[in-house]
Length: 136
Image 1 (cartoon, one colour):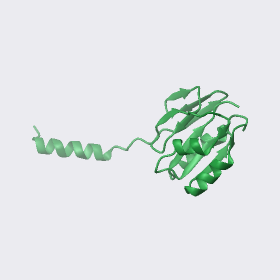
Image 2 (cartoon, rainbow, N blue to C red):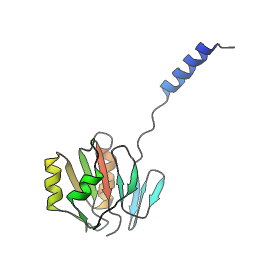
Image 3 (cartoon, helix red, strand yellow):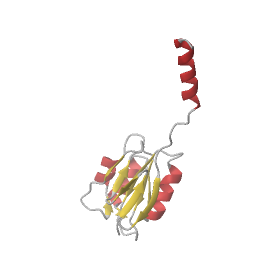
Image 4 (cartoon, rainbow, N blue to C red):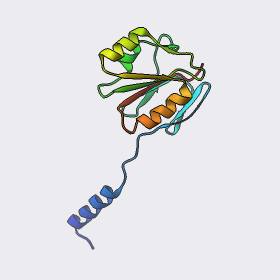
């Protein structure tokens, strides 16, 4: 029977060999829905640099403004991927572009299907926040 020290060493060795789970990623999107990790959302979402998901809160879902950017990014954000909807209807306001430049944050606006692919690629190397519009 192994002693406590030997058991502890075996446990540490076993844990060291395990891969850390990777951050969730987007799976698919269709009009009005998006899948992130194991969950499907039927509303706009924001994904933090830590991979935490929460409902997007905005006065106008078809416009990304500086107020929303300021509320959505964290200190680690270097890139914001903005999903502009299935049909590319949502836009980035001029004040949001100015705010992003001032804060040295790149804003990438793409139709939502392309935005989720771009997020999935960038999350491996960039500190990226996603703001995803799921309808038009």
